Length: 491
Ligand code: GLU
Image (cartoon, rainbow, N blue to C red; front, side, top):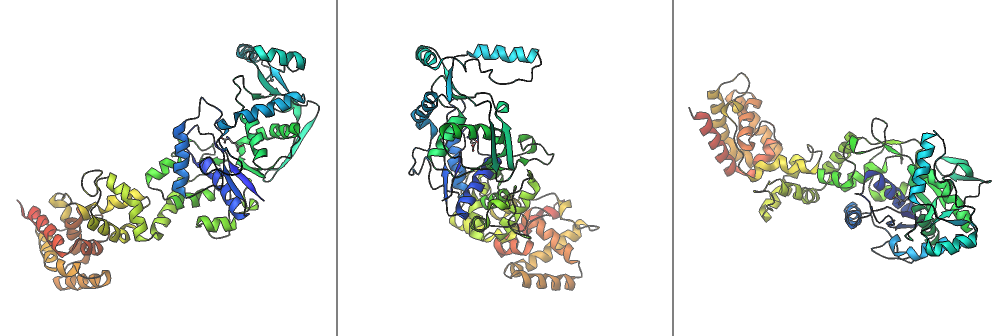
């Protein structure tokens, strides 16, 4: 039975890399009928904050990704928050001390700092701990540890080598002397380091596969050594390809938005984001990229993951978002776009919510903007003229190319004469109708429609005219044309 986990440290907002790791774990669990677990790795008390835990919950709730076991919903291996499991890690550190696989180290920060400086000055290639306390007699060290500040370090067996097979990267073999020298497992305040807590929990929680970002690959030999020290069977490892910016460097703020919140606030739909992120380092089927979460879950397998790093393409995400906006049902789209429109003051002052009638109008107007919006926030912005009288531009804006102000006024008067009938027709009928009118009046169709568009929407560029007229209704349209005529006829 597959058991996988997403094990974030709540030290920042959820970002694309974390989301990708969580998503692949989730999809793998769903694809194999296994369990997906959330574990909070919050042992670094200086960097973890409650607001980041909250952001984690908000983010995954918005995305519609739910775990089977976790700090909020519990499970057979509770607690799932590492800071609530501290005694457990101490117990396991003691076990390694007792079996001689770990040792107390009494080196002060100052000594370690001096060591680092000396090596730097001597241009020494050595890094990390020099194992100064490794050979202190265990009984004496245990005595000293009662009164002196000490950390517990792993005693890496130096004459061995460590190998493991990563599902994506394949076999690799490390000389133990090249592995992080005797890293700290338990800090002097009794808190575990990432390495100890992560291994103990993966083991106790029955994790079968570790799918995590490739930046953790260099820790894996150490983790394998730790498993061996405990006499435990390590899980399978699968290090996911890196996510890069288009310049080939690791995706970061320099490239643009990286936190899920930023994308959400920009008006990216959760389904579009999930779809796009699921393709960062994986492909599912020749010739198709649009997938729902369920479709992805039905297709996911570890063989579909790529070895090469993935490139995050903001334009591609925009394309996905536009596809999802286009395909969304009107009521669903209106509901998702609503908060953006409210904030932007589409229904009056910023923050004003729509009346029931306005909401209905907003929903009915979705077909006008669906094909034209890349982000949710654009939908309300483009429809503002339906809810508030638009500010009308200066007279020149009403005048078709190579035409005159008088002619523009004449065209508007024609418009005033037909608008009630036009507004009552569906798109197809409206089109045929205005064509007939243009012919009868011997004017170009475009010239006839342009001043009318400016009068109704306040702009030469707007969502479709006929649909707008029908949503506004004949009466409102006539009043707006009247107002425009006043501007044009003013001296
Ligand atoms: N807490 C680590 C992180 O923040 C987990 C790494 C792992 O999955 O082992 O990414």
